[in-house]
Length: 166
Image (cartoon, rainbow, N blue to C red; front, side, top):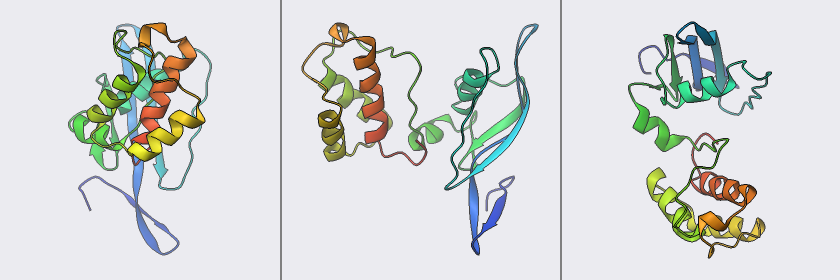
């Protein structure tokens, strides 16, 4: 067991917290983006994270992924510190951003390949099945896709990564 990592009993087996925050806080100058969030999610649980605009949902995700630094508190994913161990966290997490910022001159196939390599592993057979299920034309350049089709690229890449946390 890693230092600072809590385990919980579940059906007689000790389980590691998949996601954990302790007093996670982010201020942008005088503006409060997130204030004192403490939560824990264990394997097998599904977490819905809802709230009105400005409630801190996006800020929380960015903090969990180590994309921004907290003002106070800490976040862990699979016992890994979200700030200190960003690369290891990203290897285990699939994330679909709200905005699909991709490479406009690449084709869909090239983009899926690149996103797969960036993550480290891709289940190519599953990726191809998802492309078919989403009726996605991978031959077109990203600049020619609608917003919805650009989102499909990110969704297919995330699911095909078979990451531990999706």
